[in-house]
Length: 361
Image (cartoon, rainbow, N blue to C red):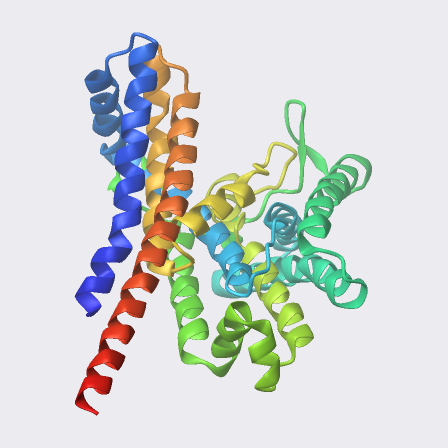
């Protein structure tokens, strides 16, 4: 039975991959591009040591973003505010870390806690609005994203938090080397894998343990499947909403740290601000499972890194974005089809069992 469930769970992503590749091939043919040349070029570059390093670094960021989103998904909460939560968390972490003179372990620990607290606090605003005023978290988190961007622009441009870190580039002071987590170049000798990769793996394990081996995780999943049934069993839905949003925001606060501590060492106005939306797609792709999310993050990162080859072949880079969108859409539809087939199969099994009982009686 477990093997059968595993096989059916792999059907949806397999269908999504095949359909998206086929649709992309049609698009490439329509613009007079060679399908085999394009795909082989992407694969050859994407499997090179440097590209694999870049892919792991990007996948680390995507993985954390998707985990933050999936915590809310488990309870039918749509946290679209990961963007605002992680950029504020990254800014606060950069400011704190740049003023610390502590040993590396202590400095990084304080930096991580700062990012998590700020991310949780920003998500807590949406949680309070939902519980106290009935405001949809979808609306509030979207608005909070724009507010966060405005706050960051003001702080960096108009206050002493921002300094000139380059030509026409304004950002926070540089983090001392004792506060950085650059990692090691164990794949490509010239490019380092973010040290935060291993912390993200620990976060993924903690996510799995929390949801599957604790009472809180059981209550969260039960509330997500049936809020009324959970309330009947004694679960306080308002407390679960607040706690879940705070956890989601805390994980979201970590999203920018691999890039901040592994590469830039400073938060500036060129810091990426779109990783939260990518996390939504990857969470759907991985069905809110940390292992599925990890594979989804690696796959999307592979497409992002290898998409540079499209330009060299004279093909618009947006083809990669089209592939990602097609995969998510087809996989989500396939998951629903597979789920409905499983429900029908279980119903038929129950009907046969009842029929046998009636005959024997």
